[in-house]
Image: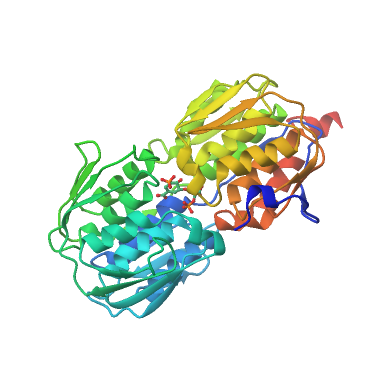
Length: 446
Ligand SMILES: O=C(O)C1=C[C@@H](OP(=O)(O)O)[C@@H](O)[C@H](O)C1
Ligand SMILES: C=C(OP(=O)(O)O)C(=O)O
């Protein structure tokens, strides 16, 4: 694991562009990671073949595809379809398919949390491991949950990756208590598979509050779309009835969290950014940009499925609660703001791709910023920033946070822009195009 303090001197890197003029661009954003990986799991467990249109193609989705294939699902690409890569056809796993598979989770929370319950349905053993930092991410609730369901999990007593799940071809299900305080993905993972348990699942959370509730709402929504009965009427409890997961043909929404850095560019440069394909209704947490960015001083308009954000030259700080995976983008904007900010409700970011609270404060402060960690978030004071290397910790959202700061601060070098391949492999090109975009009428003005 690379700790924030260990990253003192870095050579090389990607010089973040600092445009001389306000950006003015329409940016098509690839499909949602969270939706793509949920639909892949559901398609693998469904009653017939399914199609995902406009799915995300990135490291996290490739890892999910490889994991489900290793368990026996057939996943093929439809050549020539989709602007960001082919649609996917999924033939589900055969019931009680044999295990003896190896799953590489990379650094993908959705793979390390969503796939073990699927492996529990198999008749055999499945081994899970991942990147070095994946071994630091919280996994205890998944391991304990599977044991609570009668599944053998050999984790060498670590409560973390690597571990082996041995199923018998059937999971009884029933009532189960877990502590999902470290990640909403512990809940989503069990709900996604639960309809295939003999008795379904009555899941009860006990402990500190569950973070990233929007992502659980997304899970409940996709389950209902595929014909699964879910009762989420009692806070911290979810009941999934046993039954069939219907095969489906679905168009994946653009990733609204990944739209964030591009929309932030409108504020950072006092420009305009338009994102087409913005859903009229969605469970994605990224829909919160329509509240967050106006709170910071931008104009926002959603018309005909296009979200337009226009920066007005001033970025206001504020109090931002429960921003979940949006937090690194929000923090980057707060570092450019002219008044103080507080980010709350994000203590669990310490268990994300890296300890994001430590990483954001270390890297922004290295550029002259004034960020302090609080118990459950960050306090960010206005400070004049200067250029320097921005460490990325294999975290896509650290790389994009550094790029946002670089729009307004010359000389910012992103340690590893390749980290963006986790969810947006084309980020560097898209960002370069954005930075080179011209304000309306600029060509005529010369
Ligand atoms: O279920 C999902 O797709 C996700 C849930 C959230 O995890 P946490 O609850 O661990 O924050 C989010 O941060 C992550 O990027 C994706
Ligand atoms: C926390 C994130 O990812 P993961 O799905 O790996 O948890 C994220 O994308 O911000």
